[in-house]
Length: 484
Image 1 (cartoon, rainbow, N blue to C red):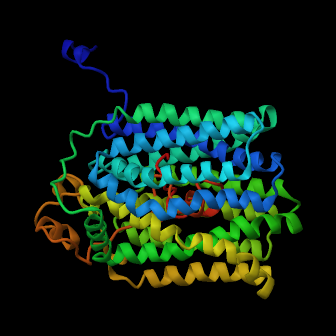
Image 2: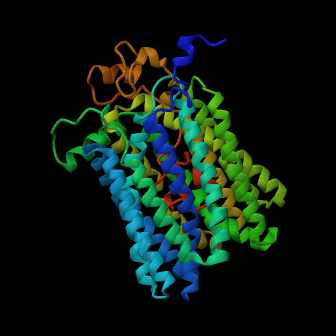
Image 3: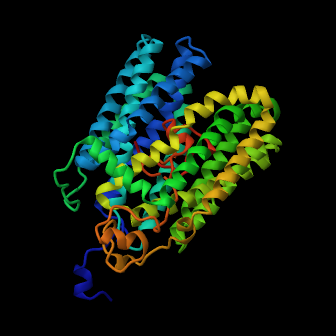
């Protein structure tokens, strides 16, 4: 029988760690992920239906990626200088307007190639400002020992929405055409921006007046350069994301066409990867490894398996199994990376550090995809794929030589206090930050967030870099983008 006090006590409908900001961020990210993953497919079909060819599709994709890379660092500095939710809403507004114009031009039959390139570039610019702000906002929205569980649930929601968005978008393109799918994406950005406008930033202290933009960028770089675990893993993923991008966006479809039976088997393999990311997120909601970065880095080794499987090539069932395993492990890495950043980076520098993470992880992707064809012509496709697998293994093994990567441990949140403000007496970077120093190398921890996410993630992944397109590398570093 319930006592009067129990009857009056409000029933809690969500876990303690799922606060108002976390719920708003997750809901908005799911909405935009549903729209954006369908819109990526719609943009390609819009180019083809306007008379373009594969080269034109590549130009439109490059037009989106280039400003994403160019403006990431500026976006990170702006997000740490201005209220992050305002930066996110402004970026969503830009994405909404650009996608709406794109939709109108496609629906009226007036979309020329240069129109689509300019509008895609505006979308990439919006994402460059959105991603660092969103990642910083997400990390500041959770605290306590359940932080890793919160990040895992967020990533699981994002991955599920990405899978559903791609499937729904493909069906809608077949039924009503790409223009309407682009219009739905514009509406999704509007709805998500409205939700993000209600985020509460009262818990985030205002930044004291300081230097200009260059000073902010320099301060962010000092934060990265002073932590060997951070810059080592970002450098690692500059190579990992680049080779996975080449393997999956260039070699994978060709292997599928020549040896596996066409696009359908390749789609099944990519779907297996998506299911793996969901399974990995479920795993990380329950598992909280003490040495986050060590576990996360060990989980990068299986990302070499898809390239090796394509080099053989394995039958469709074997390739799907390999992709599933890589999806599980990349998600484990992603949650570990986000937890490490949440624990070790001061709150007021989260967006700038995230921007350097994104920039370093995606900068080589355009180069690798451009060189993939010439490399295969020179050495052979199978040899190129074996080379991709070997590079992932080698650079990951080198990262394990960094003591901070092996030794960084999860701290007791009750002893550490608020995220980003460690208590005195803690080892490594935590103690150094408490003492007011800018950086100390012995605090290590990382694991996503790739090509994040979405906001979400360690080094950005191939898919994230391209705006969320599908592939194993898609969450190679943690499914990063937090719902751009």
